[in-house]
Length: 106
Image (cartoon, rainbow, N blue to C red; front, side, top):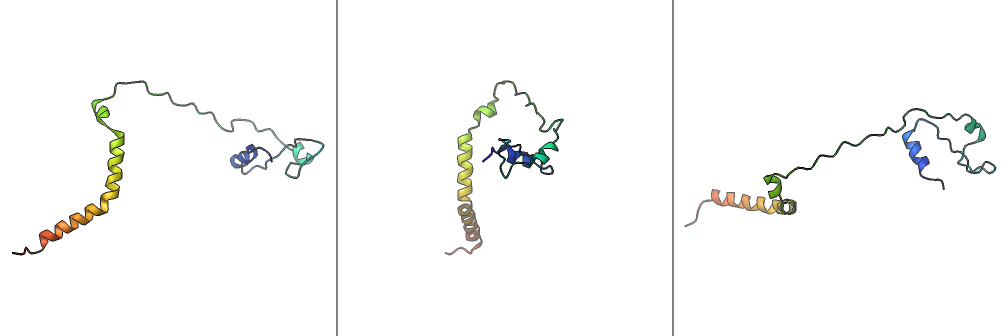
């Protein structure tokens, strides 16, 4: 099997016919292009995949008091607990509202 590069080239250039040059010119495989197709091949010029430069990283700075106070582990754990307990809290709130509305027994 050939390298996966052929597959990626077919994705990037779906409207072009992909030409596979034979590894051995004396013995061509079924998936490789014929001599006629190879003679019609044209070199692609220009930018195919542009090189994008990364943005500069931010310079180091002193963390603020709010950033020092923030604790990621506790924040995540609290949000998971809130997600788990939503139904129970709604049920308790509903029962508390009903008990206030109901007439009191003596």
